Amino acid sequence: MKYKFSNEKLEYILDELGEEYKSLLVEKSLDKNGNVDVDNINLSDLIELDIETKKPLKISKLEKTRKRMFSLSALIGIIYVMIGGLMLILRPYRTNINNRLITEFSFIVIFMGILVFLLSVYASVFLDLKRRKSSNKDISPYALFNNWKEIEALITQLTPDEYHKGPRTMVEYLSRNRMISSEDKEQILELLQIRNKIVHSSEDNLKMSKVELQKKIKMANKLIDNLSKLI
Image 1 (cartoon, rainbow, N blue to C red):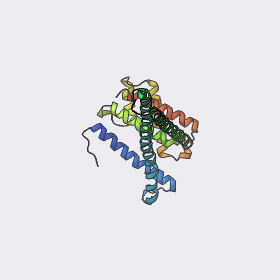
Image 2 (cartoon, rainbow, N blue to C red):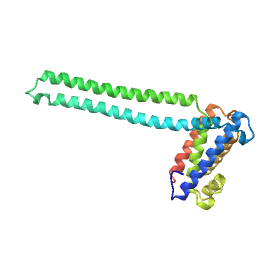
Image 3 (cartoon, rainbow, N blue to C red):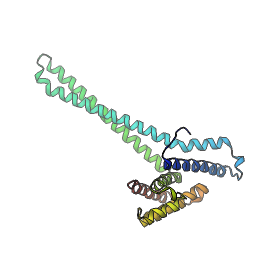
Image 4 (cartoon, one colour):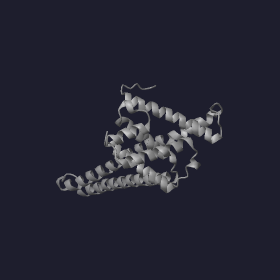
């Protein structure tokens, strides 16, 4: 492994995630080709699935970079406006320079600042709307699978090592010690069942509408927020 960890819980979670990821790739590769023998898995199909799975992570990183760039551009626009305004305010005290020239230059700087700011905001909002539209259109059960992995990592952190015998055991421990509500417990176990269907069934067999899937993703995000507060 590239990294070495002294935190046993962190290492345990990463090992579990690694095994889960390998199992998911194998399951989906077998399902795609209708194979029953793992030795007949097509290597190119496996690599293609790996690329498709990692693609959202790379896109997310690119989006963060773009957001930082647009925020910086908007800030530069605001600074230009402030500089132009300051030049206008101080204009009467600069008697040795043509006031008309200063006024014109100040308005140019202000205009440039406003233009840079508006273009940055517009680009940021446009790309965000485009991403949301694409996200709603391409919503997949695998988004819920990613939510589950985050939930599993959180309950693992909250549970002592001796209870790391599986998600159900850990959830029972958290419920018994009143760290989570009965409603949270039911929802976590429900998401566990959905996760099992995602891993062991084809996407067509999940029989979940887009509206229902969005509802489950919202529920999962709420659970993640609740569990994160306990860390």
